[in-house]
Length: 136
Image (cartoon, rainbow, N blue to C red; front, side, top):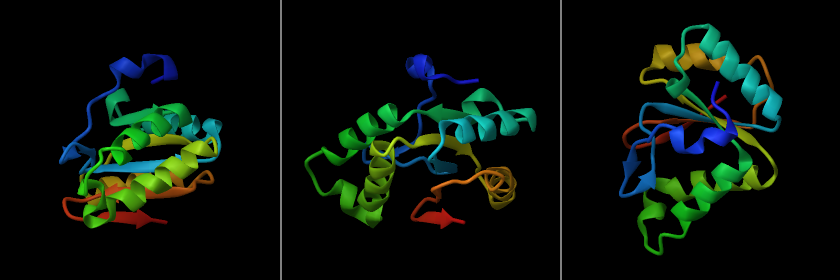
């Protein structure tokens, strides 16, 4: 299981114009660290590999979101990416924990969401090539 102390070992995620934009992944915010870790463990029990379901602390997301938003140009505003990053940042500032889950297609995304819905979650964003979908 991924831990906060293994930050340097976390996978590299796809970007768009140097911004975090992980096409083929879900980014899910949880108010409870325990709920995030439970979902991670349940997904791994179901066959996910550690790099396919990575835990991020509120501190890690705050640092990454601030870095993305502080690029000093118009790129974060393209396609509303800045609004999504701001939502991640706000949740992180309130202490939320996050999972980044590999879900390259609808079937995989639906399966992951079936596990995620077992616990309360704040949001689930599915990254497509040109749009970020909010799942419920």
